[in-house]
Length: 445
Image 1: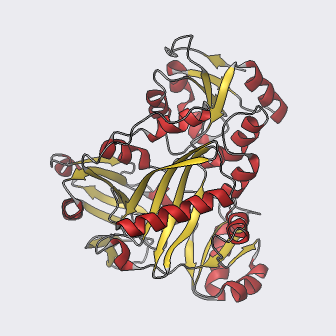
Image 2: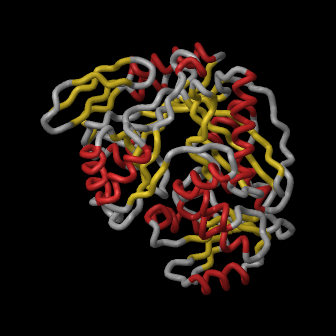
């Protein structure tokens, strides 16, 4: 076992808190910043995970790191027991069950193993919500194409096909026929590491475009902190309209919901968390705004991706710190400040047909504009695959405005300033719905 202790700097009096590391809602640096004066963070690092491997050497200089690569479950238990820890948490979907097991065995504040399973198993989650009387959603699990006929007969068409366990909107799409569903499922199962994975087929929740208003998505998310069974709803995050097939294009804080809709969304979220047995931890609950009222899309047992930055900029509230406090079995001690600005993140989302980036210009020009900054993830020549969900974003535009109208105007400027072209074999120029305005997307062979 490799142990690096450089850069701890928290003082011997601070409790030691483990973070099981992988790709997720918080970077190591943001975790360390949130923990300042609160805890001495210890990162548990499994270098068989590509995200961890790419950051391990740099991270080991900055913080305490335990190399747990190749450790058996019992060996990992021994590492945790010898580390002098006061608690454990994670910000990664892929590590929720592992973290829950370690926390449960030591009486630490985190999701129970049962709650973690419910938060990471979309089929089980639907069953529990229905059994608790919170929401009945037609849903069937499928392992192979032969399972589709019975599933579609029960769920109906059109339907949503998505992994039973997964994140980032990967391999999630709308299917309109048995042939369509069979083709999609075969394609998904043929991907790297997907053989033998289960999927779910579930009913599509029809949205009400008027609920959030023109220019905004027909769904929201609720960011909450629960400690010892008491839930504090920190924020309702508004959304830009989805890109095909079901990919997010950005967030805004505050949301545009009316007070009555806010209350209904929060009441539904509280009921869903109780149904899944969430007593300790951060949660990110996605809620569809339908003509019949709010409906749960899914419950995630972790901080939502990207939302912590928005809330911090809008209200000065540190959602990462709040999650760390729960892991230390402490109540959140932060006041929820008033909104200082309307903050947003706009995702540069390629169309489904895009296979690679051909041109990506205008970033420098946009960066000079007051109110926005651009974070880029892709460059010309990079391959793209819509099946990877949020991992195909070209970048994120971070910004703030005086009000919601100002935010929409800024996003319109983004779309007019950036000049992006994609490569898609055999495709002609098409019109891409960006979520705010129509933008011409050019294709080449």
